[in-house]
Length: 337
Image (tube, rainbow, N blue to C red; front, side, top):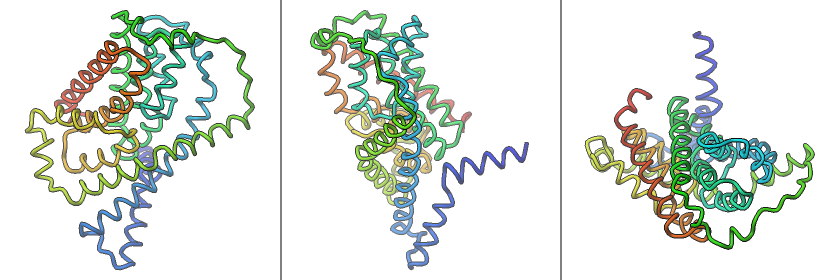
């Protein structure tokens, strides 16, 4: 048992967490005369380490996930999910989101494609909620920072929110709230050419490069904010605003997160810094979910596909779900950590 634990710890901390890289960067900065125990030196070490680690993991993970995703064009997805009904269909839609390495804005074109393919509205919204929240890349990166228990809990609550949120929207029978031009497009059943293994590798490489081009700026911004929080903002100030003693901390984190635009990879460094400042797990998760699932640009894009009533229901459903999750984890999160 001890041997298994040692192997797991090595995998989590040295392979995923790349702590060897942090030590290497720290030694390199120290050899250059930079004191990493000071604010400036510590911020520089945090920035270089997190940027390199996240971009390396992203490159590997997006390539793997994109290769898997190449097997699931919209028509094939329709055939698979069409076999299920009720919550099972919503669960399949939510699980499908785990193999799409996209931010919320990038998920919307797929949401439209699935709607055109004839998938039920609730299933497409389950996908739309889960896709930016709980993809496999996010799980691995979360595990590299927070450990398996927190990463697994995040994925579980994200999937539950996607399944129940999509099911709730389905029960409201709001199909008439889809914009008419999307309905008019209809579904075109065409025979998809079978990709060779080489084609899939090329597709995975292209997806990896395209997504890195889209997210690297948000990673840099997120790491910069994380370094600022980690080394410059007093713990006491953060505890006053977002600490457990403030009953509105989850509401504040959710409200701050919604107007921001980033994917989960950009929010992770901020979440990491907040976590090590002692901010409650529920408050951190609420912030991450609000940024990734309800960013203002994605809401504007979604308005082009659905009518205001359905858009309002979607935003309200996800917001309430995020707040409930936040308070739940602030209350019981200590049992997980």
